[in-house]
Image 1 (spheres, rainbow, N blue to C red):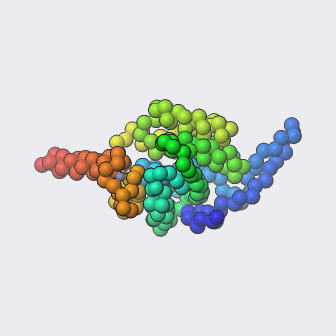
Image 2: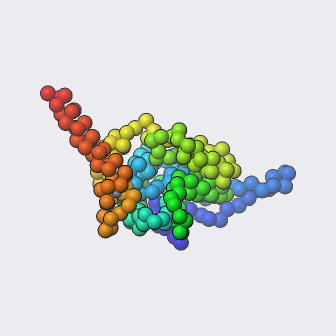
Image 3: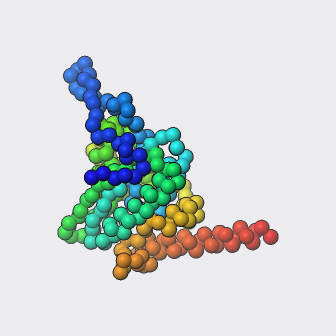
Length: 234
Ligand SMILES: [Zn+2]
């Protein structure tokens, strides 16, 4: 599969090795290969879109690996998310923010009874990507998570380190922020391209799931903050 987003024409899959004195092989980037600096997993939601947009804007001389996992589950939101990914990446490319390599993966929960935690799948795929010879030098990942000290995050970090066979630095750029602050910083055009509903209803956002409610409350908070600043100006 080929994906023509970002700088994928520079994403070469062949790599070379150098042989060390003890006989083991070490991946070695080809001369024309551009290294990446970090991995950012993009779900198509508000938080990961914000983290990616900000990183690309502030690191125009560097490259990120962007990974979207098509997560198939009983919630059936993977098609909506994929449409958002397409819209978001095209928007970024049009703004010249194409300093990234795009990797798309897929995971199907099948008929596993009960719910699973998506962060574990994300942690596993992050490990797989960071283990490759192509991205041997990448040792950081930026995570769009508010609560970095949770047990879920601990399990994610464990999986990524274990699978990648490296000590990864986990950076949490929005851990000091509130959701409404993230939304108000994100360009409105880009916000409208995101998909945040967990359980789409008739192909639309359900307005009921925790994520829809969270966004609605954040938008109200933005209005309150605007009004507060307006009143303070007098
Ligand atoms: Zn919803």
